[in-house]
Length: 377
Image (cartoon, rainbow, N blue to C red; front, side):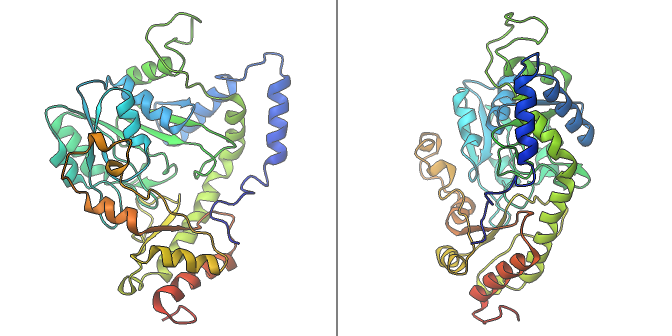
């Protein structure tokens, strides 16, 4: 079976990971959180991004919570989020006492539709939270202009898009703040959980640093300036990510080359009912490669019969999830999100795939779509 998320993703790093655990566990200072490794990781990421500040925290979800909290989002506020995507887009807003407002997504790229975002703006809107999804970054130039025109805070959920670049600007650098997730399955994953906030705003960075550590400012322990959270970063994870950071561009390039090959092989499949993501590299993510087809379940079964694992994300739009139906206006429809939930199937694109495996995956998808034995036309 060609796994979707390979279980041996850290096969080359396990000895170093064990050594890191021992080194930190036996160090005289016994510093397991927010130590020198976290500080070095934050500075290394900021330097690569050209950002003023990076604040490491416990997860991508926590990063979004910290940003919105620091921006003062709370009861009475509305935050516009995509109707299709990961639950934290809405749950972080709800947990702060604010109201998520769901904007529909583009039926092809599955990222939030800027026109629908603007149609959702009211006098209560405080922030926009676009998210990059699967293979494509959101239209950040248009969303940035909408936020500017309406005087709204812009938070870029780039949890799946670390390393992606749109018009020369890295993912995470388009809004007042961006965020990444380091959970294992992400492009820059670690052996556990983790996340980071990216910002050029020194006041926002200061507040987020306090909020991640129970409202302390880092200089005086047990002196709490605000009511904060426990979102501190693990030193073992920081050291491990520093170890993996030099190889990240190579792993991203491998993902991109696989996606390029898929795009070439799948270019003619739309007429057969299988739609690939937009080709090219500008504004593209290499997290997962996701196809759209009304025959999603049949394609999933076809791949499995040929030893290929597929993956279905987000089987319901967020406003159709029981957790969030109370925030969904009665009678409102989100056709782009509904189609995405019904039609998406992600195929393997991880950097451990061999060329032969990539070709087998491409052949199998094409065979399903065209009905020809070779899958080639």
